[in-house]
Image (cartoon, rainbow, N blue to C red; front, side, top):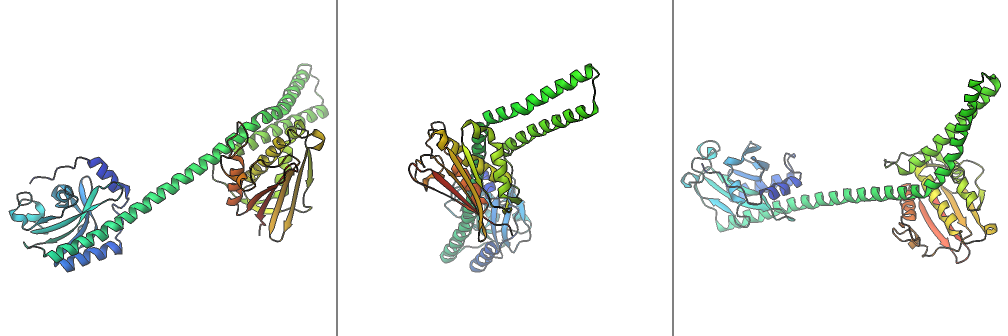
Length: 412
């Protein structure tokens, strides 16, 4: 029994078939209806939607046949896919040298007549199988029956094309999500890079304290000058310095870790206060007067506190930079928080020259006026706030500074 030769582009064809993720999937009514109609209208006991895999033909839908697959070596459809634009019709398999000794002819289901219309993928134009009708009697199809079988094959092909398009869309959505995650990660890394110098300076204080306290304890040990009270104080300060250094490193890790956000109930006022403390050195170095006007009671939101702090840090640093050319005595950063109905509102205002782009364009990715900037900071801030079901907007007037307003839903 001669087996059907492999198509020249067999690897591509198999890739197109497997890319559909349809092999070994459960039955589906739309495909089942097609084979039932094909069998009825073509007056054959068997109708199949057959997909030709590497070593088998697998039936997505079968009418009149219990088997779910047969070896590819026996498959009539393996011959049909060699001519993707033409039907393969075998009037009497017993008299056809290609099939006369085929086990499917000499044994069950005793194929005599076969008519198969190839099914072709849309994107790669690869023949992956057929809609076929089979009978155990030699016969022919009328012109109307062949046209009907062709129409039904077109419908089966469209179902496959729809699955193909859905799969491609899902892949594109996944890739887009991956790109968004990567952009967010790059944005965090960019922001972290801006903070490295500040973190290095901040780390200097606890590291110096740790070194000095350790040296004092070592001298006391050498001189056997242990005093319980003094030793307790020194050890307490050493622990404080270590804790301070650990907090600085933890905050930095929160910016660069690329992990799914975890939401919890947190206090916006606490996040703003922590941000001010975190950027204390940079604030002093830039000679900026931070004016906090926070609500007297906690403002609870359901959020990822690290991400909200990332937004706050970004806006603070942007404000520091915006006021770089302003007289030190006039550099002021006003931070307010309050509850408005069911929303928590935060406003961050600077006394700089105002935005150099339109208020709407400020949050567009890759729009920047910084020579070495990525233009990702405000875009990432916007996406973070949107992921928290909130909104962020900007307003400014030339020479009068800029104000960023954040609204978040109040935690229930």
